[in-house]
Length: 299
Image 1 (cartoon, one colour):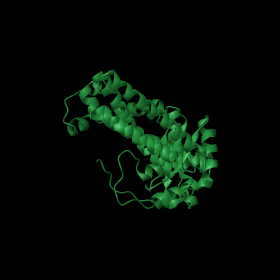
Image 2: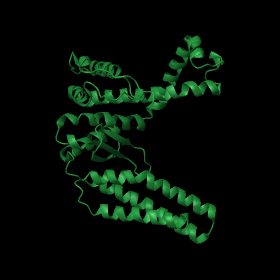
Image 3: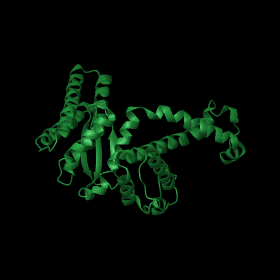
Image 4: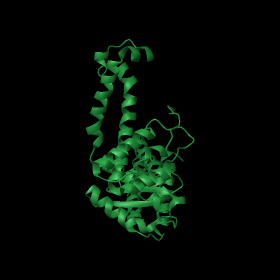
């Protein structure tokens, strides 16, 4: 037995799992279509690995096995996601209006997989798989499947797909970087002391050692900007309902500390209120008082 034999076994086990999943009853066709597309991916992997074994070229065999292993690790969670989309804990009545909303916003023949998840915070896979073109995967907490307050949070998750499709990172990242570098130059003595650097503020973008210091903050800022954008999408799509949903989900806080790639709650609330004002939508005057903030975690 070598890597080829072991990889073939893994592929065949995944294909057997897909075949069993395809025997399920799907309330909507999109989950089944995703499984059929993934079946094609693994059938191609199986063919390539078998061919590489027969041809006997070790480097080609290792390359084929590595690619197949990557697909197993990458797509096994998606198989589980598709399976849970058939679970009775799902808010099936919400699927059709959300799918129509996604198609209208994203301006393409969007396929939706809506799943009940054992994660309290809603999340999404926003068009990240070339093997699943036009698929949006949204996971909502299983315990909330009968709660209409959780539905507006899907607006935030759709925002991640909008951000990716329209490549908003390319538009906002240079703005964030320019602002960050300007602030560093303005406070250069403090920056120099804090990071024990002997660089020059005029070389922040060219000096690789300096870039290594500030570039992580640029990524944190980009991700925070994306979250704020998605909140604005939630407000635009669901109006006052999104405010109630956010209060239900987050108020007053979680005992654990906020991750650094999320904006602090006051920033999010202020941005939501600004979005509501821009869109001419109502918002509770005391909404800011509904939340408190825990200490930021840099871990």
